[in-house]
Each structure stands twice: as C-alpha cells, then as structure tokens.
Image 1 (spheres, rainbow, N blue to C red):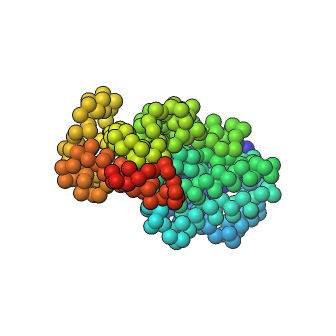
Image 2: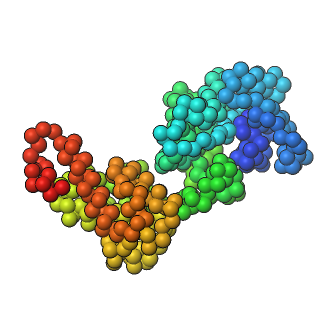
Image 3: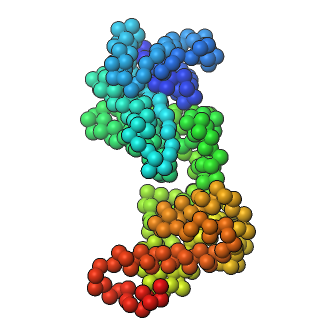
Length: 382
C-alpha cells in the first residue's frame, strides 16, 4: 500500500470491513475512508487503535446504493485527502427465501448494496489511476445456493463487473468468499452450522486476512476463497448432472464419475423396466437420507443392506428433515411422494415405487402422439 494514497472501504465498520481496513493499514496504508450507512457510536476500539498507530481513518455515512452520495464521497476524497488508490466494496446483505417467494422488492433489497453500490463505485472512479478495485462477492455465485437466488445473482453481477472492467483495461478483482467463522452475513443468518454439515467450513479472521493479502497481489480477475471439504460437499450436493467446474476437486462431479442412472434415464426406466427404476430410486433415497442424517461412510454402508425394507419413520428423520427430503426429491426428479408416505410407516421401497409410477405417468402424458417407445403394455401396467 502507498503511504501517500487513500483507500476506500465500503461496509467499512462491519466485520469484513474491519478485516480489510486492518490489513491495509498493516500493509502500509496511512489514509483510510470507511463508508457505511450509519456511523458506529461509540467508535470501535479497533478504529481507535489504527488511529493510535498514525493511520488517518475517516468515517463517512453514505448509502452506496445512492449514486449522488457515492459521487460526493469520491469528490471529498479528491479535495481533502491524498489521491484515491484503491477501493474495496464489502457492503452487502441477504434476504433468503424460495424462488417462488422472491418478488421484485426482495431482489431490490439485496441488489441495492452489492449491484448498485458496485456500479456507482465503478462509475465514479473509472477515470482515476487506481491500483486495485476489489469486489467482495460470494462463493454462492460459483457453487450455487438454494434459497438465495437474489443473493447469487447479485454476486454474479460483481463477478461480471470485474470481468468487464478488466476488458476495459481497468483494475478489478472479484473475490468469491466462503463463509467466515465469526464474521459476515452467514453468521448473522445463523447458517454456518448448516453450511459446515454440507462441507463449507468457516474461514477464521486470520485466515481471511492472509487470503486477502495474497489475493491483492495476484494478477487475477476472479478468485474463490473458501474452506471446502470436497468429499463431504460432493456427498451433500452431487446430482445426476455433471459439474465440470468442480470435477478436479472430486471425481463425483464429472460426467463419467458415476454409474448411477441420471434423472432422464430413471424416467425412461420407469416405463421400460420399472424394477430397475425402483432400484435406482432406492439408491437415490439412500444418498439423500444419508446426507440429511450426516452419516459417515461406515454408517451409510451399514444402513445400505436393508435400506429398501426400512420404514421411513424409523430412520431418524425428524419432520423438518422429511420436508427437506421431499423438497430435494422434487428438485432433482420434479416429482415427490405425498407427505404422509414419509411419516406413516411406508418403507423406502414403497416410496421408490410411488416415485417410479409418478415418473412413468409424467413420461406417458408428455409423450408425443404416436410415440411407440412407451407402448400400450406399460399403460396397462400402470
């Protein structure tokens, strides 16, 4: 960092702002402008500590979603402080819900800080000789995150903006952060435990600072920084569709890694070979149940032997897990068993048979007139 330059950090007195500002100061920055919607009162001890070490820390209240407010801050820096040399945009928020419940207002709420804030910063600094322009994105826009369509899209915008700036010859880096242990949005949303069960572990503040220091010196447009147990993540999230971006981390993400039939193949088997379809569905139900119960491999193998004959109400799934299982089946197969089948003593084989029949019916209904592939025998069987 340049001692004769100024560095602007949005979300400046939040947890990620604190990590960023402290790192910049330790790296030699002597003029920091921390931006947020409401100034902290009292001033946090860490800011006072920076000031005690001869770092000028200016706190400014401004909504980054307000174009005029961002412009005023950039002009104030130009008039009263050393030249602006770096920008870190760490402001953001979430408003999670299933896609069907996300209306325009809930998208706008998440877009305000991340999308509009990033654009306003870009627009008001694009002619300045910046050394860096860093956008704090999320690993959610790389891996996906159910229930966070607005948040995923907002972060994907940051990734795209970084690419656009680099094409214009401007500095830009989008950092797709994973969850932090004791900081950031995941903590506020109490989701760290759920993410850890799926293989996404929290980053400590010291780890985050080290990663940020390395990232700032890298010649990259986009970097994902996350602590991932890929085996657990693959077991929790792998689907019948390949995910080539992740294939190098775990072979189960590759197109040829699994011998399990995909959704389209199971649907075809539901008419052509119902027994094979039901067997494939039992294996799929085992995978999903083991993930929900957070079973180790040894426990999963023990469950596997008599799984088809096990009753769902004896497997240890609580009511919330049953709802999640049904939702996962609906997402993967576009069909799901009735709610009662997961709690009324039905066996896994019963549920697999019900799913197979639903898939067969869907294929028959969707088949074009004159399609000989389904055959009248299968209609009679149903």
